[in-house]
Image: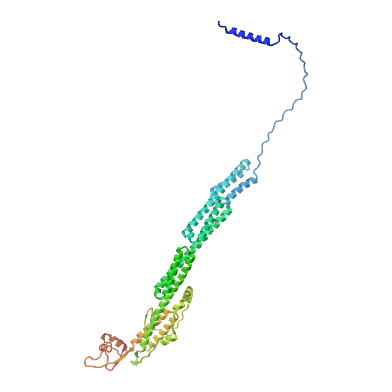
Length: 484
């Protein structure tokens, strides 16, 4: 049978009531009489004072100090001193502008200005480091350019110690840059580049000097060959060539000092060979001309000549050896070895030449190698002039003036030509014959005369003082017959 919901609620309520009853007193206590509450007099109160309004003071920012500004300025100046203005001009200008803006901001917002100044310091330090690296790279670039230049002239072979020293200095410089030691690194960089430049200059000059020695030696060897040194100065030429090739070999072995010494000796020997061969060749040629002229004069002096009156002058024998005995020939090739070659060349160019030429007739024109004699003066003693000129030639030859001596000998030869034209080897008296009477043609054709009719002009020229017309000669005329 189902109990309704209302009944269940009622039973529950009764159960609770029973529990409360059994848990409490057995009897219900009587209520206590109510006490009349005491009436308290109100206490006197002091009125509280009205609270004053709280004034909150606004915090005033600390103004920007010179210490703050100077710290930023010092950082910027430090970057400037290392060269930031040159290496990174735009960045440096921005940094300066940032500094000035921060200082200006300090008038209105010191805190913001201080913050901006700290940023300036950081940027300045970054620019300093960046510039330091740029300077390091610039130095490295300069060093390698110099090193390449040294390599081009084989500095590592010609001067290995000095070349190695430049690399040691370079490494020390880079280490100082990496350590941030600006002054020390710059000083070391300057020392390195100076060492490179000095090595390059000195080595280049030495190599250039070797080139000059080589060129001069080759030129003098060429002069020696032109003067036929292989004939006139073979020993000097051989010594010059030996020194020259040894000097070239030493240079190729990168020994500049030895090369310079050997090439200097080569140049000295080449100059000696050139001058010795030139002097000996000139002396030999001059002596040959002197000897030929001497023989001509001696031969002519033994001839008879026809004077202006048609009279035959007797021979006047002359011997040039008498003059040579009192004026012995000087061997100038021996003098070359006794003087310094370079000084001797200068002295030879500057020494004045004084030659007495007052006895040379004014009517003797000298034209290079072709000497002519004016034969119009019949009273001129051509043989005497030839002898005098030859003696002057010998004197000039002994003074080392070979060209002048040759000119004297040429003049003497020219006078001998004229003298021989007047020479008489024999005489012939013209004979009249009814058949084949004498004429210059027939006389020249005679066997004891020239045995050649075409040489008749020689007879006419030798006798033109008495023969007006070569077709007209007269019996009884005595004709001078010149030598064949």
